[in-house]
Image (cartoon, rainbow, N blue to C red; front, side, top):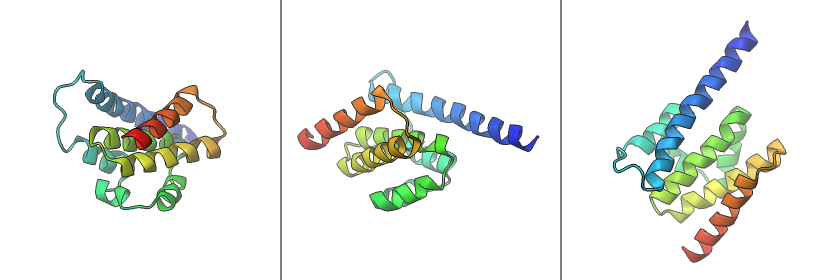
Length: 130
């Protein structure tokens, strides 16, 4: 029973995080006019139990240490949240942290994703050209 409960909990978490990320994607793609200013900070608090400022104050290494304390399924969504936070706020420092977290996720999980490799290429382009 305990294993099923934990599995259901992480699946529910992933579903809710997916809904939240779709809002951020819609905003970034210009399909959503308004997004409450508190939406992104609330995302950090609700899904990762940390304040946005606390997460952003972490160095890349500290962020990876924090991410390693999460469930493996939570690391990529945190990287995505950082990415859209950085893109929506035009903040290169946040994007650098998102890139580091995507790289850590791919390395630690052994997963291969064309989408993630494409994102890494976009990060490089955005960070060098701005």
